[in-house]
Length: 434
Image (cartoon, rainbow, N blue to C red; front, top):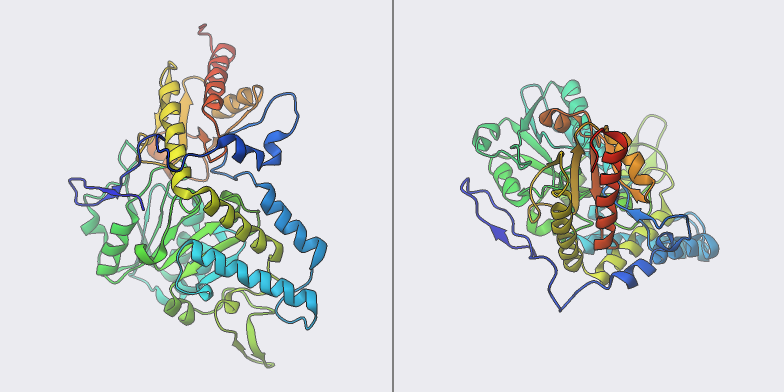
């Protein structure tokens, strides 16, 4: 596990490794890149993929696991009394077990398959939130939330009369926790916060915030979309009540997400969707529901996607999350060094070792979309826009930024090309000549 550093406000944030110099578990980047066919495609320019915070690339082993399902045992699960249906059911439930072990859940039934992080959060807000919040209650979120961890709580607030409150951030992009005692009260029923900012990469001190929330009787949902792919997340150690994450940000397929929940909460929560598979018995006027997790998995599930996500989990375990995190820190250090050489650049958020592999910036006088377009001409794929985090953009007084995000398959020389592309954009799109 990542160590800890103490700060004056008595809230701890993670202590980050030094840039990669650990001979015990270095990444073999070329071997890793060979696992991703898309990075070997012959095009006019090599693909320099710096948008993994949006969607990571998928290794061949994940594609092969999903292909094997469709080629050899494609069938529906749980009710088929024949060989391939029983095989599909076994593989699907094995996937649940492997994913549960990845985050150290106590039991597989705590793993609910959804479409993505967004659906996982909506499930909690609708099911747990509607049953437990009333007018006068409070929901605490942060200013750096992705819209997926803000809009469901806005809608819950509108349905119930509960009030939304916000933890602000500093100019450096870390949570402003000096007034946490004022924000966390007996009126706080749930704290919903991101583990890692999808824009700034900031790693938040969630373990301390979870303990503080529990001290006033509040539940805690952690948006782990940007943390689970990058470093070890242990739900038992964190003691979070809910954790949501997506397959497509962790070398897995799209269309599959996970909601982890504490068993007692999941048992008490009413269903989110009604339909097949989530019932025990159905009468004309009423129904009884299946046990967790089936209660929350109405309809035919994303079978191949669950199998693919389990293969992705196995792949990340094989590479090693600690080694991935240390490699990202090396990339971040170098990216900050190279981009700070560029005149008229503004980099948002904390320094390396306070964040995961993302660097977000603007160049004076160039719209982020134009900048992303020029970078594409040199083969660099980045994300430009508000990143589904408009309140955070408002905090910095901008409408959009450019984000370059790194993962296990990125190399230092790709950052050199990013640097060259930014200089090219300045020459093309401003009057300044270098």
